[in-house]
Length: 191
Image 1: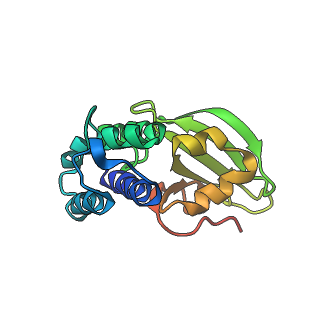
Image 2: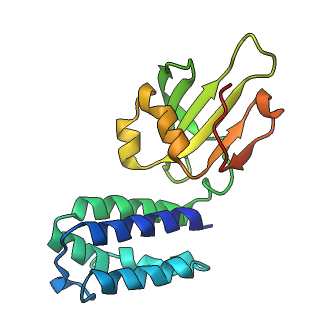
Image 3: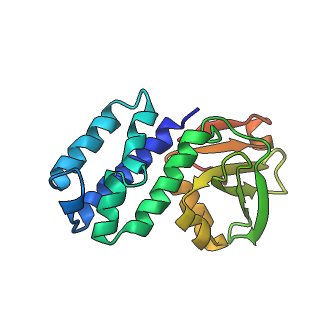
């Protein structure tokens, strides 16, 4: 099942690229940035079927042609990879218990443990942040959020909590939440 929320985020990033760079539209099906942005706005307004936006990310499709002629081909490839993942797996819709956290980065300045992992179904990168005050009963909690490839490659213990707090939503669980697992756009609680 496609992850509509992630597709929406990717399309917004595409719009930012279109308006934030000098692009050469001569090899694209669009006249200019306004024309391209208008089409993408149409996809954003009607994401009942996110697969309709797939035409944008096809090889030799409008975004690839534009990105190659404008010098942001690498950014396009990263966005296309994320789009493919968003269309393939539902790990951002339902928490997966089988996420594989293989890179344990250690504790941050709050004594929260930071780990990096990925979804075995689609390869989506995930940040796992766990915290517990050992002097307080039922204070154990964890949070997980998806990461872009850039965030995953630059993740360290000092940036983890800021990345987690910057996301529009996260998964949570642990004894602090009475053992429940959920998805929230609310704050990350450590105290």
